[in-house]
Image (cartoon, rainbow, N blue to C red; front, side, top):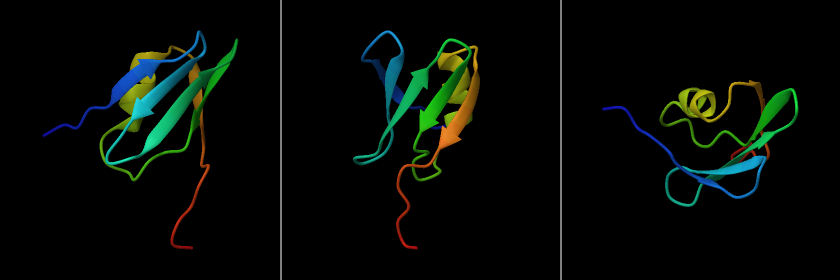
Length: 68
């Protein structure tokens, strides 16, 4: 079973990605590249979601680490 993410465009350059429970991630698009803020808990293909949302190269930025 492939897991998918719900998304919501919240501005011209920012898309909110809903994961599981209360996880929220954001794809922020610049003129040349995009940044994925946070990467969730690792369930589902976040890469496929990002690729479907933009044709720009996507860099990941981890905003929060737990259990360290």
